[in-house]
Image (cartoon, rainbow, N blue to C red; front, side, top):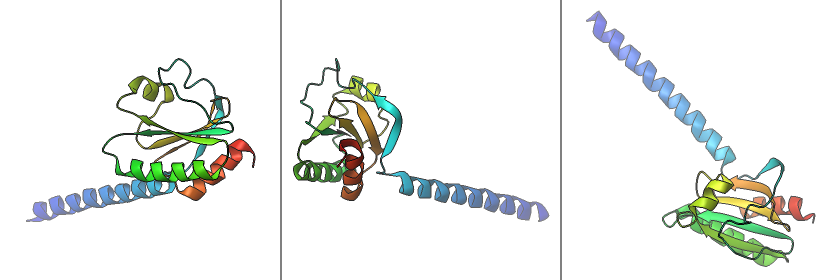
Length: 147
């Protein structure tokens, strides 16, 4: 009987540790999801020779990587399109990640939606994995275009 109590106790500890780790990871993801992070330096030429031809914005380009069955991608599309309409010289470009795998690899995109903010020269300035809020996009865009 004593052995059964030990096994149950050990199982409860494993369950408790799993719940704590899952909660911590969920909290981390909630804080990071959709937040823009800068790079150590601007990464140049992301779209050059990529086989994906699209014009860049005069001031910046909101480059969104999406997939067909991604619900947050639809919300991100609306947010980025709204921001592009609000800010002169900014365009929103959506890339189907499944059709442009070489570009996905080159950009080191690991999930959709992922949004890159490119400067006027097409250099990656900031990126966010997950669905960003409009306020976060506008704030990040201000850092790139200056005002």
